[in-house]
Amino acid sequence: MKRLLSVFLTLLTLVSLSLIFIPAFLIRPFTAQSSTGLLLSYRLRSLNPALTLWFLAAALLPILFLWIKSSSRRAKTFLALAGTLLLASAILSRQNHFEWMFHPAPPAKFIEAAQSSHVKDSDMVLGIQVGSESRAYPVRMMAYHHLMNDTFAGVPLVVTY
Image (cartoon, rainbow, N blue to C red; front, side, top):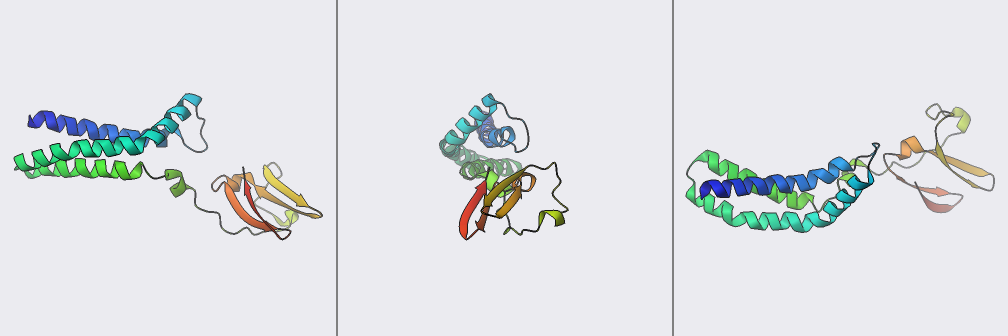
């Protein structure tokens, strides 16, 4: 019985962790992504909060039972680790790891195009022109932020792609 419950806990923990890491692995910035991978990732991201919570709840009684029945420090360490990983999965499933990766961009600072040394002629830019004023936002620099708050010609705007 103890062995069966240990295998059950191990499987619950591995599946719960897999539910978190599969979308994070499939949806990576700056890499090619398949439509099947994206669909699977989005489906898992929507199901993960409920599934990981269910796995955590399903593991509580076996963990408690095995904790009471076990006298070895090794067994209790395994149980504590399994419980911690299941709890971490339940918490992480409610997080958006892309928010950790992509920090807000610092306030924009602009210089004349002729003075720019970090933007090459071949770089793609997002451009805006109002009257005689114009600005360019290098896509390479926007790639890590995706959003840039700015005020241009007295109008607040959000630049994104």
